[in-house]
Image 1 (cartoon, rainbow, N blue to C red):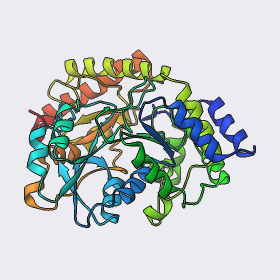
Image 2: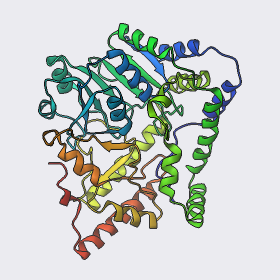
Image 3: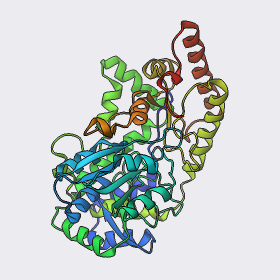
Image 4: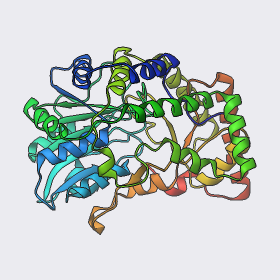
Length: 416
């Protein structure tokens, strides 16, 4: 079985974190090193996670209760939970499936007199053009937050310089992961200082907790190798366990309990050591290999199954952090692929469509996309022959579907 994804961390990075877990050190000095290594002219702030930083940011902004935050309609579910925890309202802004961007027209439709902020997310490894979003936000005097968590590649990109805050994640399944940690960039250094001051009262993440995470994800690194993952799949089946549920629960960053209580922690010194190391490594060689495999797969799918909708197919820049596909029979396609040795997944444990507060705020493109979304394995651990075989498996499924009279992906009317 070809695994769905590989954890993008090296054994040397894991070892450095474990060593730092037992060595003396000052977390404040380690955080300063991370912020300096980030190399922007704006104010930088290291934190435990994007969720933690976002929570602290909303605390510092002190928006009036009931204020609305316009949010890209497909985003991490916890981001809307944090918005609601602050007494605010998340309003979905529909996305254009072929480009994964939010348009100015969609922003205008979602805006109301209660709107105070905008949160847009770059999805699946793509980077949307920000000009229209910036112009809309500035014209309406709205605070603009740019979620760059899925688009980081180590190439020096730090989000749009006109965004008020940019969020970068180094969580477990992200590119150049430190198995936690995040960096925020601020247009206003004074706001950065207020956010830092709010975080200063939070307890530190324990060294033991981070060391345990390093050891756990060492196991996931091993599972990224095909023979070990095949053995894991067989063991799950033999034990009668739901592999999808086991994997989703294992990689969830803040599973169980009260979310806000869990995220209000400062990063431990060893986490900051690994985060600093990953930032200084710069461009990740795995990104180029991953992107090449994804481009090969996209080309073969366009030939093999032209009716399939591929979200982000028209984006100008894409690192292919994951390879999404939209299909009216997503579950059946996943089952077919898994039977042929490709661990496709719906991967819906953390991503969600933002719920509309009224009928006028619905995001139909995002709702349709998410209802048909699945992810294909297309990563640096695969060979060109694997990609050829994957395309052939998808082609065979489409042929069977047509013969059986099933609708194709266009039945969902995704995109233009």
